[in-house]
Structures are given as structure tokens and as C-alpha cells.
Length: 296
Image (cartoon, rainbow, N blue to C red):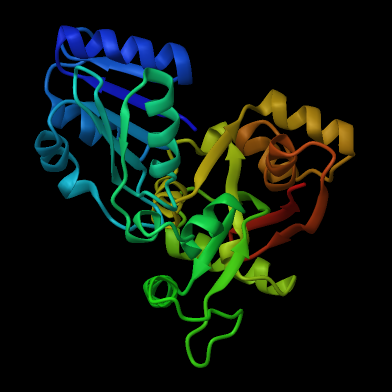
């Protein structure tokens, strides 16, 4: 888990260093590498899997309020007092694994873990926590509350429960993407969706997007990754060419003239997963090329 540890005081920074030493994390200390907390949060929210605020809970709440979008995509957010007495799971306890991180840090610094999610307080499992640990995406998300409420009431929960269904979808597809300059996020989304449909899989199975360094500023691609809540990795022409040569991938002369390498989608996907197999080789969708790779 990639974690940001944010401190506002000298004492808080000392605690941040202790936490980073024991469980890892990147430290952001006021006066050292940021000035305004609001600006920092706006810049890094969503770029880390977890955010640990060493300050009053109220400050953290006000800072993250305008950036929160969904329990399925928000990062884990924790709050710790600067004396290190209490570690509070504030946001995304289950899917973001804030509860798990809270317990880990509390043990590391000998603090009191504060977890308030209903299922945990009741000593019960929650369906979204199970999904997160298994790398699955709950769908539809509205059913999470229905199932968890049933668990809290002591009701029997089955794989199929009448009209209420919750599908746990494994995220194990890497989508390599190439596109023409200026292609919209909608067009790229539709291309990936059609690619997934060709192998009879929902687009929710896509875990990661990959493309060429030349696409680092491609607005449509960046917007799509943000909307889908997916990480996107970019690879240099040299890295792509290495995979092209290794796997003897087909190359396009037009693409070579444009970015210096003749295969983007397949090569980029292969850069993400070693010794993998293609679910769908390079397929063109009117200005967008997509290759799907099964992750091990």
C-alpha cells in the first residue's frame, strides 16, 4: 500500500518518521515539503492508497470533504493524534483497507486502534472487506449495504438472495491502449468495453491501463483512468521495443513514424505482466487499439 503520512507539527513529524520506519510511507511535513495543507491534499488525494493525518480529526475531515467520491475508489484515510495514543480509521475502512492499516499502525506504535464500522464493532465480516482482500469489485455497489445489514441482523446470507444480488468481480485484466491524438475518454472507454465484450467479460475486470510515454499528456486517456479509478502506466519507446522484439509483435509503420515504436497496446500490456497470456490480441476500434492480457 502506497501511503502518505502528513504532519503539521514538529512532534507530529517525529511520529511520522517512526511510522514510516515501521510500516513505510512517504512523509509530508508542514514547513519542510508543503506550506498549505489544503493545497497538498488537493494535489495528492487519490494518488496514494492511504493517507495518514497526524492532527485533529476535524482538520482531516475538512481537508478531504470536497475530494471524497465513492467508498469503492476513495483512499484509506486515518487520523492519529500527535502523541500517538489513538489511531482512527476515518474513511474507506473496508474497500480501502483503512481498518487493516489502523490495526497495523496501532500495533507498530503501541497505540489504541479506533474502528467504528458497524460490522467490525459487531465482530462480523463485511462483504466489501472480503471483496477487497480477494481483489474483487462489488457490483452493484448499492447491494453492499443491503447484504451487510442482513449480516448485522443475523440473517442468513446466500450467494443469491432473492432479488438482491452482489457480484464479486475479480480484477485481473490489463488493458494496453493506443489511440490517436485527441481521442475522447468516451471513445476509449467504448473501445475497451467492446474489447472486453469480445471475450465475454465485463469491463469491471480491468485492473490496470497501460500505454506509451508519448500518451502521458493524452487528456482522454488520463480522464478515463481517473473516472474508472484505475492506475495507468506509461512505458518508454525502448521498453516497448524490448517487448516487441521479445514476443515478435507486429508493428505499424504509421505508429512508428508517430511515436518511434510500432506497437503500443500489446507491448505496453506485456510491460506490466511477465509471462502472461493474451485474452485479446491487438484489436482496432476506429482510432483506438486495445489488447487485453490476463494477469497471473
